[in-house]
Image 1 (cartoon, rainbow, N blue to C red):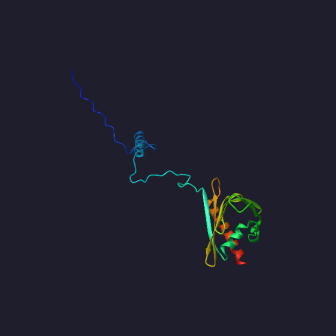
Image 2: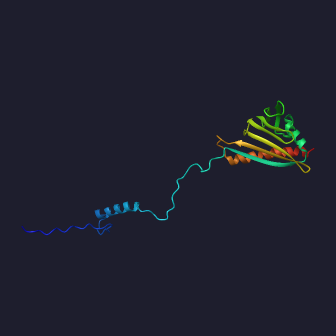
Image 3: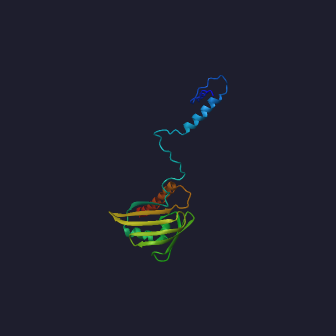
Length: 202
């Protein structure tokens, strides 16, 4: 029996192979080479590529639950005179022309209620701290910007230093916190300015 020579294996060309045909559409070899090269390029990693951070709709820091604003002013009056002006709530309309009526319901002690009408808006609060001649605080329960009002009176050279602070809860509100802070500071300075003008005229 005669031995037959083994058939030579056909070597497969390496990819990609440039297309040498004159057809308008790529041949089968070229198209196969393109598909294979695309699959390879998808697995190639770019060196020195910084990791991408997914976009988050909310900031990393949680929004504040409350804001606090305070300002101090010097008043040309004794601490006792300033205290009398603040604790005599029924006389607020005499030095604050935006308040049309005000009243203290009960004695001047923590737990008593006070109410006033400003810009045709009724505000109701409850006294939380009463230190004659030094501190006066209340919580605003009803009215614009419910929160805390804090007054502190300190003796100064030739008068007194009055510090007025307010805090406001911003949970559940869709208003801009920065704008609320600005409006709150305007309200604090307005009260301080009217109290200072009350003793400047006398």
